Length: 281
Image (cartoon, rainbow, N blue to C red; front, side, top):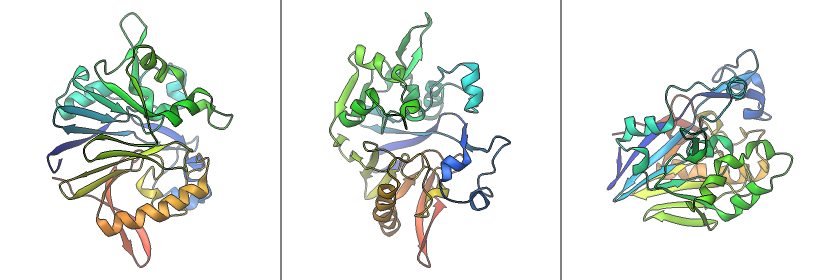
């Protein structure tokens, strides 16, 4: 798919599962379970949909998925089902090898967004998955990741960023910054204080990556907010601002955790917002 002169591809990483109640917060199970049937442990099926952008000489990956550094017990707890490593998916869907990726962007450093930053090499040592890439993350998010509090400490795993810092590949950014012309990251509080969303504007079109602000199509209704969000009222304010704009301006919307149709457009009907699967070319 092309946005103007930029090529973009969705690169799914792996299926995993999280608690349905946590994913849908105060929304009753009777409302979310028809779309997201829970398993016997009340977990719902999710995915991690990374975005590849080819912009001139830059080959950019936004998010790196959950990674494959998990023990068998951890993988079972998270319900991880992986068909192939992320680097192989990148190659299959974009034609680029891991060492051809020039930039990796993390919207935040939770394990399911930054887990694929690093891997174990043949000697069992931690190493960058994309060895020639600059890894971009906001300074505010990095500082929080180093000293998280009790509510989100389990989401931050130092092995996903420490090797990048040690090898000089990690580059800390401002609260809002431009990666390449037309591709910007902006901090939007709600899920956390320092999570960012990506916006790609090219050829008269907008592709907006909602990260964990709107993790799936089902979360488009304003009140459908994750229990994981640290600042749910701010999530609501951001959704009130961005989703009507997405509908008015016909944005392509990437819902990072949607397991089946992550790329959608938002439409407003009878005063209500909903996601409609996008036709792509």
